[in-house]
Image 1 (tube, rainbow, N blue to C red):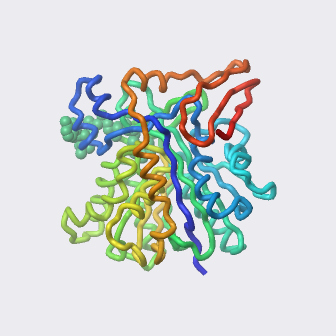
Image 2: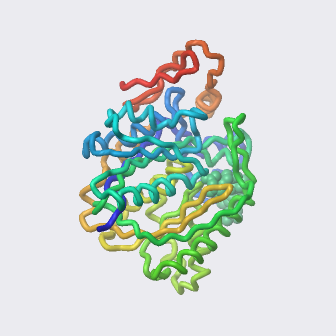
Image 3: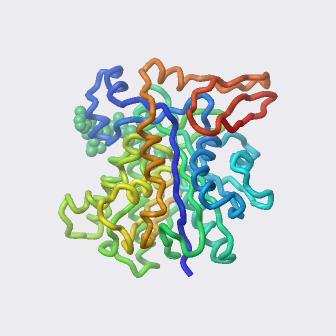
Length: 388
Ligand code: CAA
């Protein structure tokens, strides 16, 4: 019996800032963003959008297909938690109408935790193959204005159903792990924006890639040349391109630069115009590969490098299942991305600065999202979500 990803669907907010606009205000060349970091646009969450509404929106098309009662566990991965105690997934459980017997839990370790959730979900399904686990990763990437991280903001959520005999990706049990206590990127409880040592974070990312790969090849029979494509954690798309060149060099792969680039190229289309979505980014990258690669991927091996600052990293592998193309949500994704609205720099600042009420009074939140779920109010310190 194989275990893996049976369904995958993602969501991002309906507003975006073009990085050309940001570059113009900063009086720098837009090529620094378009080419230098490989990013074109970044999604900006509306005031009534948060990790809960994005998560429910990502999962809704998937639940419509498989039915709410089929989910036995919901694992919610995020580093943009809305509560220190209550799991954000409990709100999503109600919004999606999941069964009262479905367990819900939230996981955190920077951008890595969705991968931890997937591995735990695979273990649960291996133990009880009739069960299906819904893994949702949802995040809003926020850095201080006028910092080097500002152009790498974004937001998005991805929902994946983990099951026995999956229709999209069979996940292999062998993994390579690496953990080291470092301060490359973090967000103390009292801050709404992340702190980051940018250059150091990219070095630790590459070091973790090498370490996880070394650990992976010790336990797996697979070698570099067995893989046709690679999905990387995507803080910005150039990071994946750099990382993959690094891995190809470590393995003395003997491929041309073009061949190396082709192994990641199709994973980057969506993230280039969404921006960083932390926990969701690598899996939005996988969706981009499955939905945009012209080649039939059936039977192909895909390598995954998941990285969470702080840091925990993992390299694992999967095989694309024959017939996968019939199970995708490609049209939904493309029409959602095409329908987004561009914002001016001033509108971006308004979205960025929209206050997060802390006083316990009743606050109606203005409508902005075009999604099916919204945060309608915060009242008495309670978040009130509605289905539109
Ligand atoms: N035309 C073309 N390219 C240009 C250019 C121009 N006019 N101007 C600059 N560039 C290139 C630079 O040469 C550079 O390319 P190389 O890296 O190949 O040398 C690239 O654009 C970026 O320029 P800088 O290095 O000067 O950029 P920066 O220092 O202002 O910012 C960054 C880069 C530090 C990564 C910053 O974006 C940042 O802090 N981001 C947030 C942290 C991050 O994403 N880290 C990634 C690893 S940690 C992680 O993955 C977890 C997570 O999700 C955050």
